[in-house]
Amino acid sequence: MTESVDLSRVHLIGIGGAGMSGVARILLSRGAVVSGSDVKDSRPVLALRAMGAEIAVGHAAGNLSISGGLPTVVVTSFAAIPQDNPELLAAREHGIPVIRRSDLLAELMVGHRQVLIAGTHGKTSTTSMAVAALQSAGLDPSFAIGGQLNRAGTNAHHGTGDAFVAEADESDASLLRYRPDIAVVTNIEPDHLDHFGTAEAYFAVFDDFADRLSDDGHLIVCLDDGHAAALGERVAQRGVNVLGYGTTAAAAAHPDIPVAAEILDITVSEAGSRARMRIDDREVTATLQTPGAHMVLNGAAALVAGRLAGGELDKLVEGLSDFSGVRRRFEYRGTVEAGEFAGVRVFDDYAHHPTEVTAVLRAAREMVEAEGQGRVLVVFQPHLYSRTIEFAGEFAAALSLADAAVVLEIYGAREQPVEGVTSRIITDAMTCEVAYEPDFSAAPTAVARLARPGDVVLTMGAGSVTLLAAEILTELGS
Image (cartoon, rainbow, N blue to C red):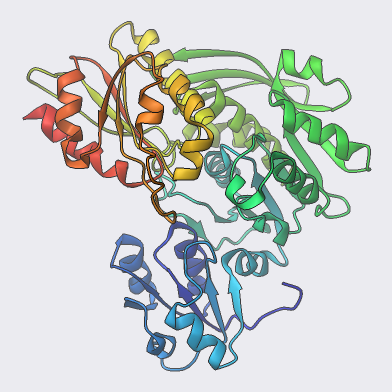
């Protein structure tokens, strides 16, 4: 998008989605007239109505006028909303500009110090940590993230400070819409090949993203990720200001990148992870309530970004230590209090790529080992046929890190089923105890056949599997 658009009256198709509801919330806070539509009522829809948005259930051409007049711009997700959507067709008939959510977010960030978090994994957690740290430092940033902060209970905010923190999504190259002042790349690993076609094209979008930095901007890269570190080394040669974060060993392996945060050691306990870091030639200690070495890396990135955005280090560390997590990122859902399965705890996580699955299951393993009891049981729902086919072997290896697993049928989302492809292409290669359960409603019973007192159960995936956490608790507690 090269020209500014009139944001006085905005209509959002799919307004209840995580990304759309966030930008709608910011628009309402800024005084815009907001309307939208979605396929059903939901908590985000109800919250936006309470803020003043006019929202229709179902899609129809007449929805464009639901706020009392035609909108000045219509916002859509090209991935989720088909081109024959009646509201899109009506917008074109009326000559109303149609833009993507990323275009709108870029427009909302104009005039702010833009802090963008990119990477294949960890964007939501790192963005959320940066927001929590900056809030603790009293800077009140605006933000738009892909999940709800547990403490704040929201996914977006129009702040009074000059910083605007947001995720930069690479899945459809929309991260190239932004002009960051501070950009974080947590890691780079081939994904979304249905859009990019090749791993090389996927890698290239991050180089292009680095080239979008403002003239005095900074790129912050994870030195523990080889591809992110290599990106830092490449763009530094082009004159970009690059800073790194990571473990001592990773810092030593990349001497050409200045280290802004060095992780000296990590101690895992029942409460989470305690990390000693060297930042600004000082040693600081942060306790992360969400377990896992990957979360410590995300926290280090958040602190570096927070320092560049003007936060005072001790306050940033305090905010990071107080950070209670994001919905669906190792989110605690409950404990079975009595009966045959007493002590079983259920967590829910969004992990849907083999690397993410590996990180979460390792974190769960570290947690039960620190406690000295229990096993790790995962209920996994593969997401997208294309991703499942591409990474079947990697998924099998990752899920086998659990002591036992229940694997559901593939959640196709925007994709049509592929003949002959089921989740068995994963389960047939797994080495732990595993149950393939194509009947979604039978999953809690399958968990009951595998669980033991004191186990940690993780529902995992980007689809509807999150709905099972409560049902599993009911099944085990009955």
